[in-house]
Image (cartoon, rainbow over all chains, first blue to last red; front, side):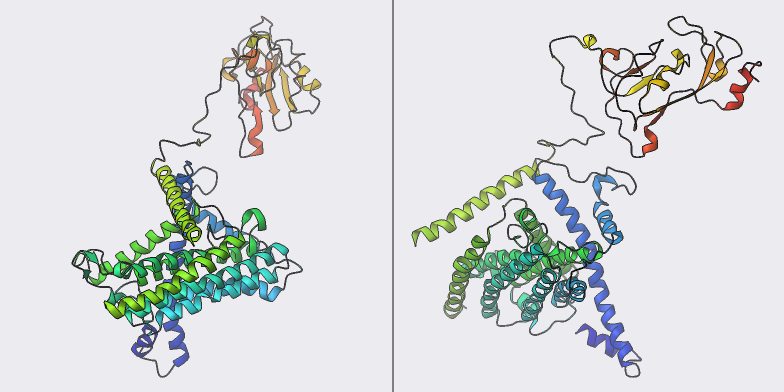
Length: 358
Length: 191
């Protein structure tokens, strides 16, 4: 793992163990944080523009005084971020202050530490654990705790409703997502992220890339079950009943402002990336090139990985600006009555398939 | 069982249909654009036909405008203003009815009146104006009026004059000349 390698590589590792450890961790964590920040700015801009285009508007075009949003409003997300940083940080009088302060960081940490096991390229991965995908699914659930804490500690009926709804939704949708991943693990025989990707190199009959989504009909369905459950876990429209502006103001985030709200926002976009990255890794061949042997060196791996992830994020944005919000009972019935039986059948089908074909 | 699978099929097909609609709108952005970049682009003003001529209005409530060359500095509009949003400063000129080109002073108004006063300040604070039109009636030279409407031949209508700074709503109509230049022409009797 990268941190261990860095610790061994430092010349003063044995004399200053704590200092070495902290330095190595920061060297690994800082680029990830910068990446999330830059990616979030890009994603927010894309969301603003794409949503406007889909609604026959033009989106941010750089009107206004002070900090002009430049051409085509490119600096609009920067201005938004600056506004959120400069805003007063309000903590309600009747809120449970310790939990209120802690909640955004727990949510952000849940999204942030998932990046440790994301394979950006052949060699670019912070920790290639042998339980990689299990680790990501496990720490991804951490954000539920943060959202419940935020809803509870705000001492506000909307926040509490939002927090409870969010918890019910995320926990429910983790089951079909996890079951779809189990069917992938059955095929590949490994939990390591790099191992899953290496399984997908090559082609099927020399035409299709040997991605798991094309491997058999069951994994094709599993991809959609996983991806839609992932969208639901991100609390994005059409599954945004925890935030539901028209019913719950902003759900669990109602009482938050300034930096703390920005952290929720950032972690939402980070989670979107994590879900897309898992879907790319598990189903779409990760850093493998779609055409076998074409631009398949280790440098291009990052390009293919980012391209695939960002297309899936575009798909999420597309979902958001097309589909209306589901009702709570509809949301639950999709999860329990459709996704769960289908993913169970998938596991069975993949088992039979790998027994007969594989 | 049929209902269950039919339901799933309807859901998937309607989602695909909806997404194809949004995709088409996203691609055709510049063609079917419904919004305007307001200060740069504006909707064309529709032709008005309300049964009588534009000149038949006697009142329009838009922005106050002053033809400063016609103003004789009688202060009637300042006195009548119910909210005191007009401020006028005048000084007595040395000679009556003569043009003073270097301070932009014209001696005779368009009605033929000889001007005895130099108007060195004529400010209207449009943020305080209550659009009562009372200042328009007493003006002997008809030089203060609301833009547009019956006055549209004098000044085109202006109803979009919002500003970023409140001070920019104070309209200064007097010629921008420093006091030293004006003081040359001030009557010596007053000095």
